[in-house]
Length: 318
Image (tube, one colour):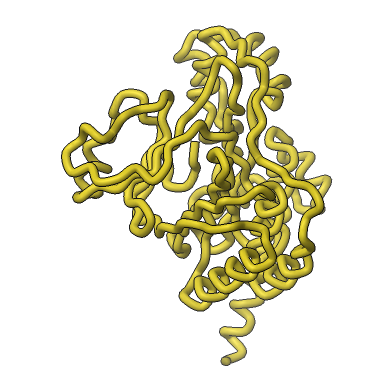
């Protein structure tokens, strides 16, 4: 490797490391000021602001996103479906009533839908099978703690002590008692809670005082988390898994050590995971590790699909 290339790689590693420091602050404190991020990381405030903009532009950073928790008066439902012509169905379902999110995949299912209510898609042309449809738990994004694949895999293996207690990721809160204006705020801010508020409030005719009263209690009703993909989302292959497991929290903790954001939620007896890898070698290592987890008893079986396209900014699973 030439000296010039070595220097370029070192500069990239240094910048990724600094990006990661900023992301960690946003993951832990979604509404933290750039001034406070600078104080906590030692990075100048102006540079922090520039880094955040760069990460958005390069699709390294997403959010912080808002994911609602299930409540007695609010549920979302996930459908794992197979169609003869999945691309046609995926496109047809754009703006379909009650459909919140769509994914086009290949594997154990080829269309993944998240809806505001349980729906019957068997009446659609080309329907073949429904693998599973259940109430969906709240979405959880892992915290990326390492940027190195080998280091992450080593940490994952160190966590493979068989759990003593069963655990499920599904948790339900009593109610989401929001007024219409508060639901409007959620719908306007759900893809990035840090979005500038002035124009939104003016356009929706919502008083700033209402926003001020709403935002401190938001974490009671939702998970607010940022996603981090060090090499930009276009560089990754996204793989969806349905793990049948009675140890969902432990499984999510282990797989959440990967060096890019992993997405998790419960679906009945299953744990859904959207994991991302950079190349075929990582695909092989990931599957090998999952088979190790199965042998250890963390899961009894699983289904898998590769993601071709997703709606709603491409990554977030409502």
